[in-house]
Image (cartoon, rainbow, N blue to C red; front, side, top):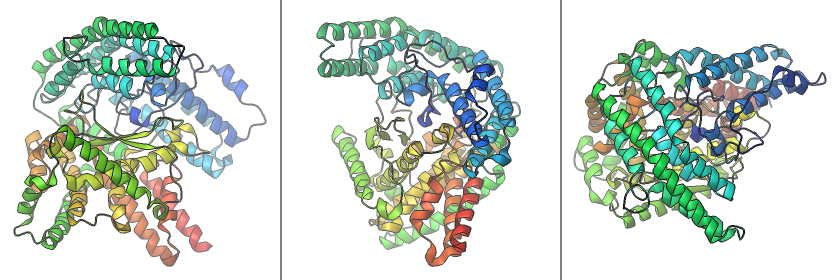
Length: 629
């Protein structure tokens, strides 16, 4: 993954946590085994004396993006490109060192460009590009400060997710590339284990709770045919389905070719995939013996310094850990008061804690943990998104072209995956955006939260924001495919609140669900900082959620475990939302009747993701321009 929760515009060590905001490249040979950046001679030839300073800058942005991301086969696949489709990323230290040197060279190249001669749009790109490179170079010292295998994301589940969800098979070559990837899992996992060993030597070992999750999920992947006598495994079922569909639509692919491809994939699963996963499992079983129950990054060398940097990268603010903790406590109190008003509205006899327990336990708020109950949830979530699509003209000027689908999290990872998440569409829009709902435990998916969850992950939330971002014209690719977590997740949380102003959440229980989800994000500010700087234990964090929210205890367990392996990431949601609302209310007060919420949303979205201070500067400039006109 990228070093911090913020997704860097330039991929220096891109992994599965970052690939949902993937990057792009343009290597011509789909079977190329390497990607070499252009030489200085090539660079000089690409820039003619007739180029303006802005054209030179944008050529640099494009070159750096393409060179950097062409080095990541997984990123190419995420964008729907076929280059290097038979390979995995290079996880070696040598690759990381080379990435660092490339970033230093890009920064040097940027220094030859006169910012004062750039047009306004290119100046913004220049500033963002420069900041990102400087931070990547500065943050190289923290390269080992993460857990490359954990219950939230990791190579063990990421390779399967990529093959199933991103590796499309539209030709025999695509199928052969899929098989090639299966056969290359062994060397790939060897590099993964080397990285784990380097972290172990630096005393960066996941806490004990991580290991049962990761070992279980890894075993699940090598369960079923051809690994045993059960039903086809997830990968064999996926490959068979895709190749069968190819044979049905392409007359050039006969039954014998299909069967041969399936046999080759079966052999690759047995001879390459199974031993690679077993080797990883064996390593993790041994490493688990060294793990402790200390959860916060305070336990690492210079852990406090690391966490402060992580907070800056995540929130794009200068807020300290203590300040964020206090903001969380105040927001929890405010939301509790709004919940009490709903409790009184529905005539519940009891205090807020009793009302939360009622919402947590009463069967009317949950669908059955059956295939029928899960299908009903998916259908109703889809219906909610279709309904709100009819209101988007009142909320937005610009709308995405790419489609959105609702999908259940796959069985191989549903026990460990989060409650819900969004995966952006392919670069060309032919693969839709996906709203994933985790239906493993229906008691963790209350119906009263369904509405807010659909708005956050779908429309007007991440799909509206990220699909529009990819479709923007006239900005460099590093901005179209990069991002800032506080901006992205702040928008997602703001999108839970926005529909209320347009007549949604008519059911008071759904409105309570909206508040429950906002409360959850406020608690994150308290618990994330509590674990990583105040030395809270895992159980203290779980207790805080259980005592202050209506969510299931299983939700609390997953969230605290997420805090532990993704330090600072969960603080982005509330900090980002608060800034978006603050700027909106400030603009509304300044403009009065001139204020148009559609124009405000356009101003927030039309540049793509930005640090929060830059969003503020853009909104202020928009307000000033409207006032002067």
